[in-house]
Image (cartoon, rainbow, N blue to C red; front, side):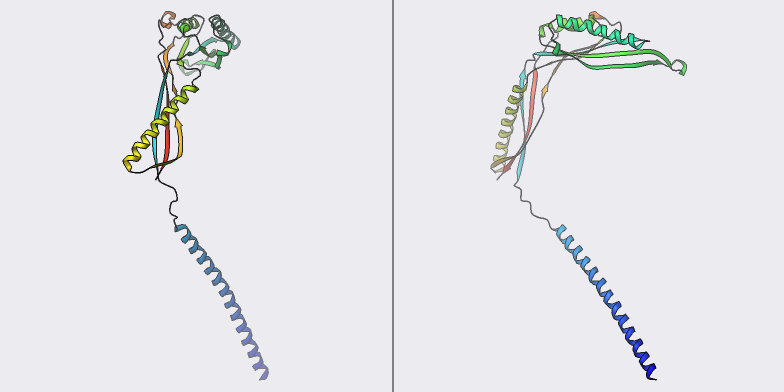
Length: 263
């Protein structure tokens, strides 16, 4: 009996220990879960807190400045085209036209630095009679850009390049070659315009202007376009020569955005 009694006591002790151990683990899990809940709630409180803005109020104004200037350079783009079943022949045809035109330009007072190739393309040509592709040959196209600094020679140069092989003339425009000083002048006018508007606006609002907070500028010279033509193969040379090409005036524009602190 004593042994049975001792056995029961041993069983009861082990059962109690198991229950205590389970309760210990449960308590740990509960504490960990509670820690996560407290941390999550704290983060939510931090996220929901909004700091008051510390930046001062500002006003934004736009100013514009314009300067007119007579252009001193004409810029013309033109192309030469040659076609042949043989790529080398087509290329030689364009090279021959380019050599003649460049020689003419130099004899007209255009310097090497003012003549440059802006595009050179070789492309196969096809036709599709009755849905079948038929090879026609190769087309070679070279595009040159020329600056003409003697504006009195514009008419003569435009006519001459068509006579020596150019079949497309486009984007003849007149620009001011060194326009940085004019840009600065336009910018200065734009800033004065913006400041004047800001002063008027601040008086109307009953506030005082403070420091400049931000500044940005956009705009630039607006070129004058005088002439463009596309002659095509066998085009009419007489109609390609403009009897008079006015150069007009260029407008250099500066627009600025200035943000002022107000008090």
